[in-house]
Image (tube, rainbow, N blue to C red):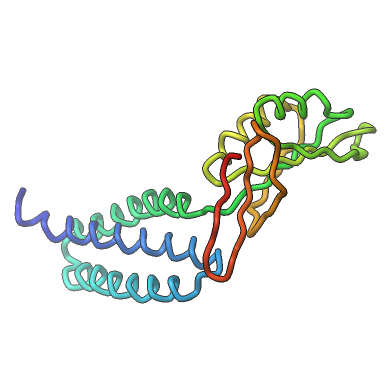
Amino acid sequence: MSIAFLQPAAIAALVVLEVGVWQVRMAVAARGRRRVAAVLGALGAVIQVVALGQVVTDLDNPANVVGYAVGVAAGVYLGVGIGGRLAADPVEHRVVVAGDGAEVAAQLRARGRPVTTQPAVGLDGPATILFVVAGAGADAEVARELRRLAPDGFHTSSVLRSASAPPLPLGFVQVAAARVGRRREQLTSV
């Protein structure tokens, strides 16, 4: 590797780290962890000043600017992935289907998904709202199941800051998150 590419590579590495730290900081701040977010903010600022200092000291070298841009892109990509893994909050999925929704609800229950139904009135008459809560790790899987089982339904989802539920019968996926002081407990399969 030529010495001319060491500085842009170092800049890219610093920016990957800084943007990744920023993404994680945003994820923990959204969950109310202010002290951790503040420490990560200070760390990110130091990394950013060092990286930008390297770019500004040699603006005649376009490779430094490219290294910075590549670092931002890679840092965002990696940081979003890491932030998603840190997101332990459950997700509530809602699907509005025409009719009583009994068939979709039965198929979800057969797969171990606890589902709650609520009668509603839609644009075309009687409808049902199905509610399914999924842990962060199963969120995408549940969303796919719901799209497959109710392709014509109206789908929405929301991240829940907390959730609690009584124990479910054997065979159902128990998903609940309880905040106890600063500690977080995740209940899993029963």
